[in-house]
Each structure stands twice: as structure tokens, then as C-alpha cells.
Image (cartoon, rainbow, N blue to C red; front, top):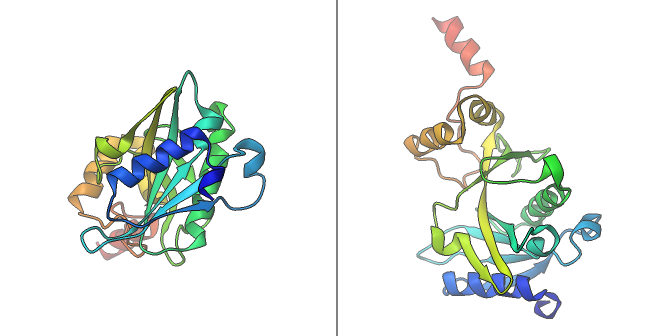
Amino acid sequence: MDHDLSPAAAVVRDHLAARFPARELTVLPATQGPIYERVPGLHMIRLAPTREEGGWLYVTAGLWDATQHHGHGLEFVLLAPDHDPRHIETLTMTAYYHAAGGSFALDHGHTVPIGRPWIRGSACRFLVVSLPYLWGPSLEMCSLPEGHARILWLLPITRAERNFKHKHGLEALEQKLEAARIAPSDPCRKSVIPGWWQRMRRATAA
């Protein structure tokens, strides 16, 4: 499906191939549905894990074309423990949400509800738009002939973590996540912020 990529999306694909030369790269379509009314050329880039780098990477390609302003726009990366169409669905939903514009447009520090666990059995039902710390600026900044695409990380978080971020800010949440040494792609990871039921249990025990 590479021939269907827009020129900008093809640059994003080549940027990912250069950043992750050992990972097998596959171009996939977005989940079928109304996304093509807002982002006609949306595709997904899937990068397989290697012995050195675990986890599957899913990256949007073509979102920039529909949402850029003066040559500057976003693409998103999601780190997952497996290859599953659910991750393409999650990115498609996020792209559709972002492409609505206005108050729905996403940026660094924003959160977006998934509407379901990001992986079955996970307590994480939200995504926070974070810097791609695991891969650095060499992934984040993708130069295009007409501007640049900024690739930001969609990190799954719990409702309690989302509420904590809204109250204390993204940096405070990131400090909590770093201190807990979370495995970002672990669907069974515990929330670093106690939920209301945990607070009640502690209060009862006290």
C-alpha cells in the first residue's frame, strides 16, 4: 500500500525506517469508517520488535496532511506489547478526534478517552499525549519539504492518573510514572495513583 501514501506520509515512513533500521516496517490502512471523511489519506506504520528493542510500534502517517497549520502538524506513536488490529483502531479513533479541530485538537499534555480498556483487562482507558522520551528527538522531529511533523507519544493511563494530571499537571504525573518505573506497554500495570476504592480500603484499614 506504499503507493497510496501522500508525499508527506511517505517522508514519515522513511523517517521511521531510518530511525528503526532493524525493525520490519509494514504500511497498513486505518480502521474503516468515518475517518476517511476527515483524514482521507490516513495510514498506519507498524514496526515489529527486535531482540534489542521490544514492543510493537504503531505510528500514524497522513494525519499531518489533514491537520497541519502553516506546515506544522502532528503524527502519533503508540507502543504496544503485541500486534493487534485494536491498536490501529485506537490510533484511528485518536486521529479522528484530533482532526475535528477546535477544542478537540490534541497537543502535548492533552488527554483523550479511549472509551474502553486500551487492551482487554487493562485499567488504562485514557491516552496522554507525551513526548516520545523512549526514542528521543530523533523520532519526534520529522522534517518535511513543506514544514515538519512532530511525532508525539500516546501513553495509556488510568482514570486516577488522568485526574491527577488534570489537578497537578503533566510533569507531576510523569514524575510519578518515572518513579514507579512503569513498563509503558504492560496492559496489567497498576495505577501509580490510588483510585477511590484503594483510598477507601486504606481509610478502613486505618
